[in-house]
Amino acid sequence: MKDEGKSRTCFSLLGQVRAHHGDHEIDLGSPQQRAVAAALLLAQGRPLTVNDLVEAVWERPPNSPASVVRTYVWRLRNALEPGHLRAQPWRILRSVAGAYLLDVDDDRVDWQAFKRHVGEARARRLDGDHAAALLSYDRALALWRGDPLTSVPGPLADRERFRIQAQHLDVLEERLHLQVDAGHYAEAITGASALVEQHPLREGLHQALMHALYRAGRQADALAAYRTVHRILDEELGIAPGPDLRSLHARILRAGRPAPAPPNPETARRRTPVPRQLPYAAADFTGRVPQTQRVHDALLRHHAHAMPIVLVTGMGGVGKTALVMHSVRTVLASYPDGQLHTDLRGAGGTPADPGSVLAAFLRALGHADSVIPDELDERAALYRTVLARRRVLIVLDDAADREQILPLLPGSPTCAVVVTSRNSLAPLPVSLRVTLGALPDDEALDLFTRLVGSARVAAEPQLARQVLASCGGLPLAIRVIGSRLAARPSGAWPDWPNGSPTNSTGCRN
Image (cartoon, rainbow, N blue to C red; front, side, top):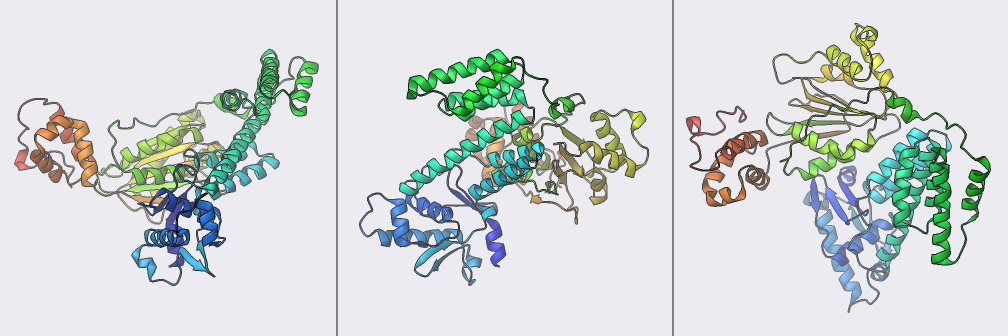
């Protein structure tokens, strides 16, 4: 039971201080109570005394601060530990020798995960693996959701907020220098230019901008960038640029025009087609916030030897495809080498042949029919070879079974796969399984209102409830019926065949 409790409770510090137990967001209470939770999380498993927590939360403590802190801890314990866990000897938030300890795995706290990804990026950079290092930096930065410890009061939060923001800026700067080393000059120039405006006194950012401009063949712009930082530092601080900037400036002056740039792997990739096959995302997508966030996070959580595989299951019409198309839009920047998509027709009578799908994917990746093998195994091997070390997102919609999926899985851990199916596809080795049910009543009403208009729903609420009840919370049924009603902007609501609006859509079953 201990592992179950720890594995399902996740915490966020990089933005609003939040906690989730599975799909359920936990109410952490008042700002001061959140400050107690944040202090315990920042301690990383080190017990904190009541006095430690008082000093963390208040500069001027209230009357009886120890009693207030104990109340906050009691409330947090009740919020964090579901009823079935409270009877266990192990507790997430427990007392240890007169102090309090929040026992959470580092991977369940976004700030700790951020530091782990940064450590991986630095190690891979030392190894000379620029692509893997950039991917690890991207995973770290994807965890950032705003100012850390937002709205959390207290001296500790103020200190930690400054420290965390400083490390965030360090990582942004490191990534810029790595982009230059990897030959991604255009991207580095764009990123450095924006950050220099936000942090004009940070010399490392100016250095990255100058270096990228110079390596891109823009010597005059690089020298102009040096004159700009020289002026800013003189006017704001009364100092000259530091030795690193001066040294780079001198090298640019001595070298004249830059030497030929090293091969840029991104340029080489762009010589071949970059498929962008994802279909449109529904503009009226509604609800499903926890599920969307889980898919988003899973697609940014890579491992050294395994790619993310996300499986979304549920009955027909429940909105699997709509959820996927909505979720993946937020991670496309992490898959710059393209997106592949296919409808596997698993729910129909003629599921797509994996060999034919592989041939279509290989053509989209720039291979002529004459070089595509005839045998399924050989096609799959070529497909894996083409995708090796590339960052491609593959969406396999409406899969029939595991056997249909396996040949379509790339071998590179830099790729990711999202599968939708009405079946469980066991034992497909997935990193995240999301099972969709009917929309909750409030989300179903929200979707219906967006389709037919709030005035119409407000004017005839009883009819709206009857329609939604007959739809059974299925988004497709709601969308079909709502669209029909929207096409009849005036007059009575239509009579549905056999007394049920879903009988004519086929969505109910």
